[in-house]
Image (cartoon, rainbow, N blue to C red; front, side, top):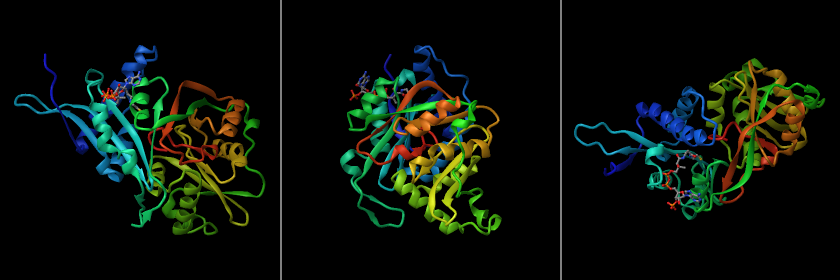
Length: 336
Ligand SMILES: CC(C)(COP(=O)(O)OP(=O)(O)OC[C@H]1O[C@@H](n2cnc3c(N)ncnc32)[C@H](O)[C@@H]1OP(=O)(O)O)[C@@H](O)C(=O)NCCC(=O)NCCS
């Protein structure tokens, strides 16, 4: 039987549920073969994230569909989302239904949602100025997945660093000491009301500039819109600073246990900041933290506190380095 022809187009809002189902089916397919089938899908977080990315990066979100023929409905068989933050293009998601894999759909989607490495060049920054930093292509893969790692590596987006999922509740909290004396934690949420709730704290514009400067130093790019999204989704954040007002970093956690992002100008504060966040926002169940291998301070502190490594590590991939992962914990793997 001849296979249906595939076309590509931007998604409509009503396609997002199908995209979330493609994500679950494609991951569950290879995880089942590895003996780790996924639990039934909880689509809500994927839907909210993809709505956010459709709003921030509408030109880098494409779905692969079977071409509609009379009497047959168009079907979504894959999708890809790239996001651009200043000079960094990050492949957030790329999924193709198992029955449609190995026929070039993933490669075609990739070419539509990310520029080629040479074309990534320099980017326009949000103020309309040309960003002189060389462009970077990056993503996060599953170490158990040779197809995606082979596909991206051929383009120079090579796996460079493991990212471990540490899960649990601290059973030895002394490994997470809390903040050293003289360091203040200023609540970030809700951003709009921070200056009203805490008259001694910085105003909204000043706070955004401070967070942007921390992000450019640690993550390599500023991303205010993602901060706002994370806060709307229930993450509670703090700005850390000296009593003299000197910024030291920021950190987020949430009651549902999703931890991060954490960005610190001084990596020696890592265990103290994690300890502060774990005590200030106690999750209802287990905490889940994505820890890049380079962040040895977070890895050691969390393991000693009693969290355990779960599943296969993921891998950060890039064409050239852009972030200082020694001082960063990402929000997740599809949005750093
Ligand atoms: C990864 C995925 C999106 C790729 O989509 P696809 O339509 O199957 O991919 P394509 O057919 O376009 O290309 C696959 C490429 O991987 C390469 N590949 C496959 N197995 C490989 C291996 N063991 N080593 C190296 N390369 C490999 C193929 O050679 C092909 O490259 P080519 O076009 O240069 O020959 C799809 O397999 C999928 O959804 N997988 C499950 C979910 C997943 O892991 N998504 C990625 C999240 S980061």
